[in-house]
Length: 221
Ligand code: TZP
Ligand code: MG
Image (cartoon, rainbow, N blue to C red; front, side, top):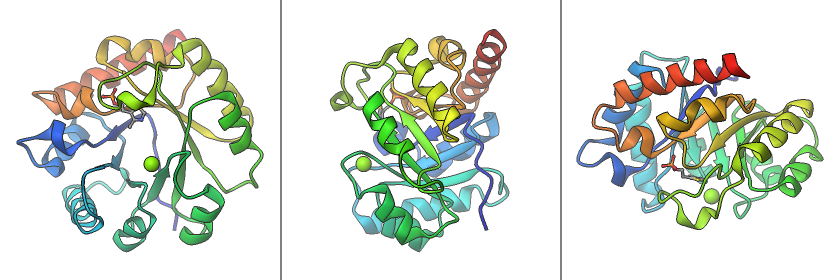
């Protein structure tokens, strides 16, 4: 069964930025404030640690079946955890291969860094990719190698092409409370944040403010 996936405010976890708080505690607090989906991402973790981390996040959301839990990169971990989805980058396993491994139900997200990346995703058979992560909107210290940033004008045109092709779009990179309305107004289906929530002193309040800015941006769209 395909679980719901609401991309409105999509939290991507960073274990270092959450410290000293456990990631699962930050996730639970952020969901109480309005985070609608969670991606478990930890580039420094072993597969075994990532599986344990995913299990802890799922346990912290036991009462929230409406919040999808997605695993970054590790298809094996996503399958073992029974995650609701998997997100891969351009340098990971090809999405056709990932879809063959996971079957039809889990949500499959793909990072898209250019119009060429999006065109390639749109040419795939329907049902291969579900979600494209337009990345990065702005340069960000959270992922310095992500590059200089697409800017919101490019994000707007990519989001529109994604929607026309039946794909859900989310934007990531450098999104703060101050910039959330501008990104939401660019027509994406959701905003992904890492530091805006993981590094916040109060993740519940941070999520609440982001949701309010997303509402404001959508009204201005
Ligand atoms: N992919 C592209 S940018 C990024 C990822 C994982 C990090 C975004 O982090 P932040 O703190 O929301 O700018
Ligand atoms: Mg990757």
